[in-house]
Length: 265
Ligand code: KIV
Ligand code: NA
Picture 1 (spheres, rainbow, N blue to C red):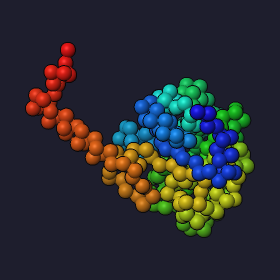
Picture 2 (cartoon, rainbow, N blue to C red; picture 1 turned 30 degrees about the vertical axis):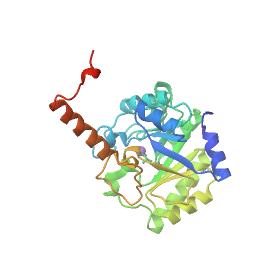
Picture 3 (cartoon, helix red, strand yellow; picture 1 turned 135 degrees about the vertical axis):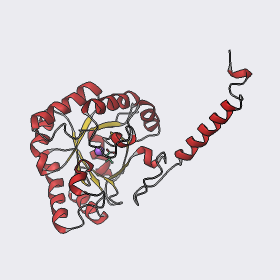
Picture 4 (cartoon, helix red, strand yellow; picture 1 turned 90 degrees about the vertical axis):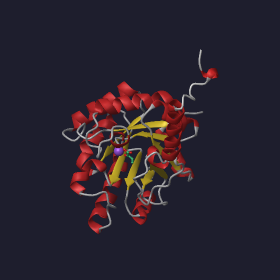
């Protein structure tokens, strides 16, 4: 397979081919997603939830993100690997944002970084781009600001926030970002943004009028089962599959059925 690049994603948008993206946090999952033909793997800071069991994305550290990212990179032969800048690794100043991005690129071998926010982080985005590091934006429901929002409800339903989102998206494109993620915003607004930008807009809970879709892999595989937002389509029910497998194993061990004569030396 030819490696997907930030350029290929732009071509996909121009050709009207939708971009497929999922999160990945480890080597085994990365291999499976890559072999299945996924375009983009996001080493999301949602690892803080899915992998570490935290309630929010805030606690995950840069070192932990780099560990996840390097594992994902080793499993990806074709997919583009994008890594989230975690909370606290870029907000205090643009130089720190660049240093964090350089660490991700150098220590994990990933291909791009993703950063939450618009105008507020303009100087950081510029600095990172100037170093030759591709940047993916992230607007709408940006989970690192959850304590500002107060809840995980749909963003930009009101005029003022919608206008800010539109101008932030334009700004990210103008600065040279290669794509923007829109999370949990009205489909009509997301479509408008996608149509007004030449770079791909990738949605999660942002409807069908955008240039690609992203989901958290544990959610779409049905490994999690208590998270049921409207935008989530489950493609498997691995929670039940895995539970049954483990119950069966426990049963077999207790019953002295495992290992059998053939399963020992
Ligand atoms: O961390 C994450 O999983 C994300 C996606 C939901 C876009 O940022
Ligand atoms: Na994220």
